[in-house]
Image (tube, rainbow, N blue to C red; front, side):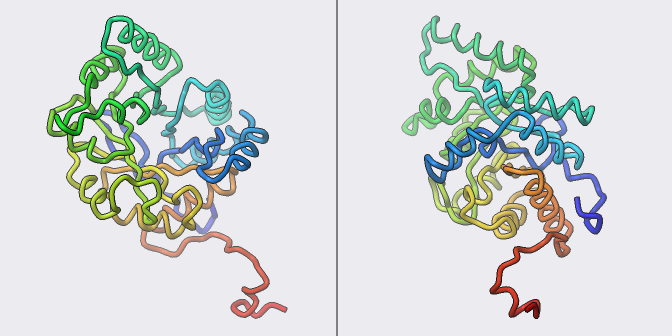
Length: 287
């Protein structure tokens, strides 16, 4: 953090009885899910290392942002988290997003049991079945999520906190209507409407009416919005109990989004270095 920035602890919220940072460390930028191009994905996968991940996670941990979300069963992510924890002597609260089996026969349930056993063994605290599984099980006609009550019970039985990862915000409504035993939800939410299933104002209303805290993702629309624009919209339009997930590719990017977020929440100017281009000389008076 810049010396001129805030020294206050980063705001936190509660997911059930679990205290988490309101900023969540995103992992798409670690793992090569750029939502930009195949070439960009390839570049990330070829250059990112566990040590590089740890460099970035370390920045967040030192700022009190200790909650990370992603597919925990990917080995390179496990290694990066462990490295950062060892360097800082601080533990990450891990929100994992595994794919669970779609079927409801005994064999399918047994496979899901094994998946969840592995999540627990790898250190997951919050377990949120990925949208690949969740959204495939949404029954719009019946307004429910097939089998999800059974999965949530399996998660509870292992001492993990159940949540839902979804790209269809009506899933949140159906979960609340049915009294599904979850403590949080994940929803895409950004000012550009990027990858959003419903318009921004509709998703905004769903978030505000949700029975539990909502984890918002893609605040900068996968690089389509500048950090100040994307983060200002997200922090200004969610509730104090909700969260924003931010992915970064370098330690400097991590420091920048943290300081910008602090400045927005504290209603002050951000202490970050602006971009330097020749066109800015008309503003700075440079030669």
